[in-house]
Image (cartoon, rainbow, N blue to C red; front, top):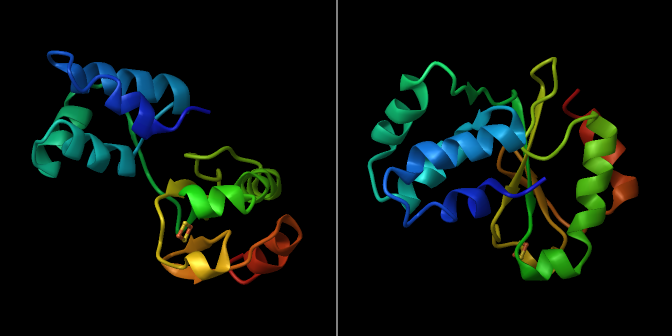
Length: 148
Ligand code: FES
C-alpha cells in the first residue's frame, strides 16, 4: 500500500489538489485516515480544521476512525534498515489488516511514523505513544496481548 504521505504530496502543486489527494488516498485505503487529514493540512498549508472541513464536506469522502490502540511503526531510515518492514508484515498478519487500516472491532489501527527518537533501539514501534524498541516479528504477538 502506498504511504498516504506520498500520495498527498504528489498533489501539492495541483490547483484544488487537496480534494484529488483525498480521493487518491481513499482509493488506496478505502477511507481517509485521520492522520492523512492532518498531513494534508501541512502539505497544502491550511489549518487542520479546514482540511477536516474539506474531507467531511463531500459525502463520498469518508474520514476513517482510528482504533482504540494506535500502533505506529517508525519507518525512518535507521528503523527501516533494522528491519521495520518485517515488523510491519508481522503486525499486518497478526491483526489481519494492512497499514493505515483499523481492525473491524475498532481495537487497533496501524500507521507509519517518522523517527520517534528511540533510534538506539531500532526497529521501534509505539502503541498509544508508548515506545517498544528492538522489536522483531516474533515479539509482536506478546506485545499485542497486553492490549487485547
Ligand atoms: S529511526 Fe526509528 S526511532 Fe529513530
